[in-house]
Amino acid sequence: MSLPDREKTGVSFLLRGIALAGLIGSLALVSACTVRPLYSNAPLSTGSGASANSELASIAIKPVKTRYAQQVRNNLIFGFGRGAGEPASPAYSLDLGVTEAVESSALVQVGTDQDEPTAGSVTLAAGYTLSDTATGKVIAVGKRAITSSFDRPRQEFAAYRAQIDAENRAARELAEALQLSIAQDLVRHGKTPG
Image (cartoon, rainbow, N blue to C red; front, side, top):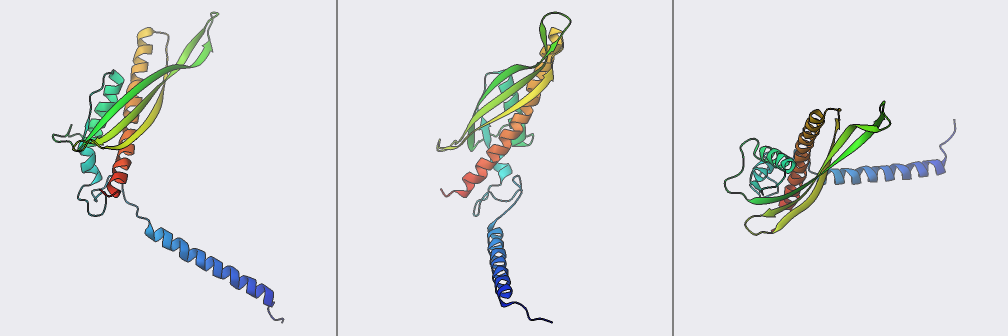
């Protein structure tokens, strides 16, 4: 039998100490984290009585001018109020601007000498400004975009209807993305003092 090498024992002891210090440091960092569901009924911040659901339900969305923007607005109203409609006395005001881009995504060679589009995509992009109705102070500004694809058949009405359906899908998905983004903005706003 031989005795352990003193150099290896010292290095091993040092590595164990570093590993233990790293473990204790990471436990301290993890213990400072608070994770909770975004749409829970818990208050947005310590000392606040408002939950994310009640804050979202108190957002009034300003009128928009286009059909696809109205689809986004309607989906947001439904999502914010969980089906209850617009708030009677809103705490926040949301200014929404939605733009649309329609593109042909694929070209397929047809029996003639012309290429004919067979697929398209609709991209809806929304910019928003969330402000406090009492003070007029801007709380958050953001942008989101969603693309939805569709088949473009040869018949004109069928192609138009497919594009409208793609707009509706994109509007629904964009409203969901905006709702999540605005909920996160409200949580961040609730954590800041005054």
